[in-house]
Each structure stands twice: as C-alpha cells, then as structure tokens.
Image (tube, rainbow, N blue to C red):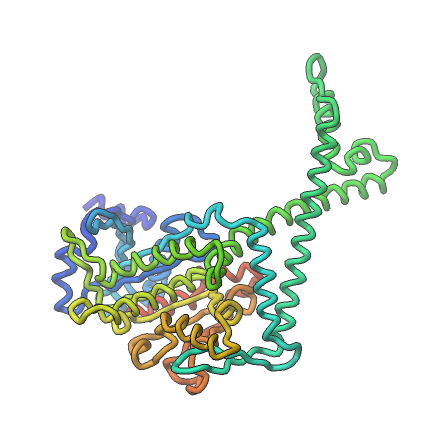
Length: 472
C-alpha cells in the first residue's frame, strides 16, 4: 500500500513496464461485455528519430484530455508484448470518465525512422524539390483558377487548383534557390579558409605565457575569423564595431546554412525518399520497406498475422493516426489493409473498414502528394494506368464500402505550416462538401508559429480532443 500511495503521489513514477502476450486472457474476457480495449496505431512524422516518442505523445495526449473532461486516469502501463517470436511495444491507457464509464486504449507505433538514415543526400532532396515545383507549375496558372483530373470514385474527377498556388510554388522555389546559394557560398568560403589555415605554420606553445598561447591560437584561426585582426587591434572604435558585426554576421550565416541543410536533408529528405517512388526512382526499395513497417504492425492489430503461440488481438475499434509524412504512411497502410481484407477468403476477413473508427492526420502533405506526384492522365493509355494506380487506394474508390458511417477522417492543419494543408483531393467533388463522409478539415488555431507550427499540434487542445472523441 505504501508503494502504491507513493506512485499516485508522484505521477512521474507511475509508468510501469510489463511483459506478456499481445492479447491475454484478461482482454479476451472483456470482449463479450463490449469493454475490451481499443487500439491506436500511430505513424510518426519526418525528422522524428526517437523510438517510442510518438507512443508517449499520443498516450499523454489521451490522458491530458481525459483529465480535462473530469475523468480519473490510472497510471500508464508500458507493455512489451510477445507475439509469436517477436515483440511489440505499447502504452496502455486506462481511465474512468465523468460518467463513471471505464475506457482502455492500447497505443502502438509504426517506427520507420532508421530506414531513411543516410539514404537521402542533400542533392537528392534539392532535385526532388525542383522536380516537384516543375510538376506543380505545369498545372498552375497565375491568378487564374485551374484544374487537374484524378481518377477516383468511379471516374476521372475534375479537381480545382487555387489561383494563388502558382505564386506559392514560385515563392518556395525562390526560398530553395536562396538556401542553395547560401549553403554553397558558406561551403566554398569555409573551404578557402581551411586552405589558408593549412598554409600557415603551426603555432608554437612551449616556453610562453597564457596570453601568448591565446594570441597564437587566434593567429592560426584567423582565416576562419574574418575581421579578427581589426577586433584585436582596431584602428578606431568604428572599425572595431564594423569588424565585430561582420564576424557575428558570418557566424550567423554559417549557423543558418547548417540548420537549413539539416532541415532539408532530415525533413524534406524523408519526403523525397517516400514520395519520389510514385515514379520510378532509386528509392523504390526504401519506400517498400517503410510501407512494410506500417503494414506489418497493422496486420497484427487487425488480426491478419496469426501466431501459433499467441492469440490474435480482437480490437473491435482501431484508430489510425499519422503526423506529417506519417500521415501518408497511415493512409497507405490503411488502404493496404483494406485491400488485404477484400482479397481474403470469407473465413479470413477482418472487417477492416468497419473496425477502423477514425483516421486522424495532422501536418499532412497528402494533398501536395496527390497534386504533384500522382500520375496525371493526358491520354487514354494514361487513364488506364491511373485507374490501376488508384485501385490500390480504396479510400478514394467508394464511400459506401470503405468509408462507412462509423469511420471519420479528420485532418488538422495550419496556414503557418508549409508542409500541411487542407485535404481537398481525397473526396468526390460531385458530393456536397457538407457530406459527413468528406474529410473533416480543421485549422488548429494554436499552431500559429511559422514553420514550427508543423510540430505544435502535439501540444495543442485540438489534437487531444479529436483523439479522445475517437476513443469514446
């Protein structure tokens, strides 16, 4: 009792680690009573390299919202689940709501970050951005509403393009060109500075005092510190301030180049690796590996992957969540699971569409991938190819079959997030926009910091509310 009281008194120490089967007898007994736990499958976004980070973020978001609505949240249990000869980690969230109803959710993660590490170069990413811009400009017209066609919901659908899209693409091109120029300039200058430093004689340190040592080091490093001579021995006060300002400006330029290159490779590079293979590219195998990660976890949760020593889970409701590039993986994973279910014999079907309670995407580039990278038809032969490409995306084939009334697709985005956007290209334009089967696009009013808005959703109320609503 003393230990239990201590755990409750210190919430930070309430997370407990357990080991056991993925679906034990304690859960099986709850199925008949309709109180068995639900499952959440979350696909992390680009640049998120820490394993279990998204499991923790989603579990904490559910707990925070449950407490905000007057619920009583139990300590989070962390379980390493055995399923056959492998292990699958999850967080178990249990709470009682304000009406004294008990709820339980198991949070799983499709973790793919290590697959892209070191696979995408800086120039691969630049080429990807230029190709994306070129494809986008092909369909856009400045200050004129234009359109493109996409095969979905039984035929070619005419989808609108904003009259401002052309200017948006041009703006991105200019920013990319500026960053490439800055990074190239810094790289060339640092290279020249390095050569100048090597051409000097090495500083001598023996037999001299401390200040001589400092001066010798500064002298040897002088090529890397433009204006340092005027700072150490200024001709006048104005000369000192000018040299100091130029030196600080140089350091700031280096920092900007390093940060920009990191962002381009680590964030945009992940997108390049995953999205480029919609056309033939060297990343095709990598994209298949990423998709396999999502599909593997999904097959286990929906009960497709049977193990002789472990019972398959019987989650009657599963929520699929995807942030950033993870939303593209979540979309592809859910489509693949529906296709697997459709192709399975009757005895092996798992009713994927009916058991999927919600698809929640946030910070999603899905509309951009549909617009720029999906194959566009210009001839009858192209339309055959387009039909084949979209036949593996049942979520855009038939509302009645693959988006039942129990299924809700919520997309959270922000105008301050250059990666995300409202999803308009995954619904039938002939169906009224207020139809509940449409993607429910919502702007997060608290994700308002330019660029950083892309990761601000995690700590904002809107995502927590939608996660919680999908579980109760």
